[in-house]
Image 1 (cartoon, one colour):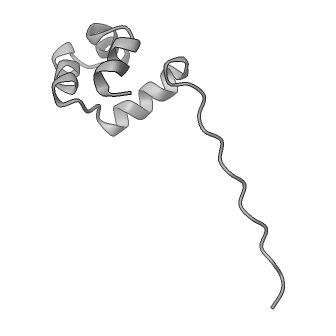
Image 2: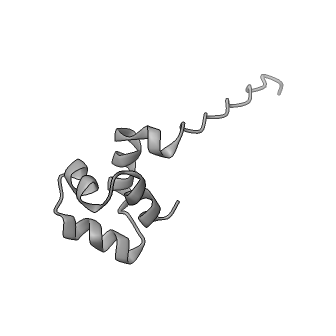
Length: 68
């Protein structure tokens, strides 16, 4: 999803601004630049996982061999 799609899915510019505790012009700038700042995007993913879907599961690390 691009920034516009994410913002729309979250309820629009004003809803995202309210959620992130920023002013709407900041979110409008994200739309214009098609880029949500990394810290805000991480927050949005945690705050609204329903919009982003389940987090990918980490793959287990392989076992360490004792063989020398």
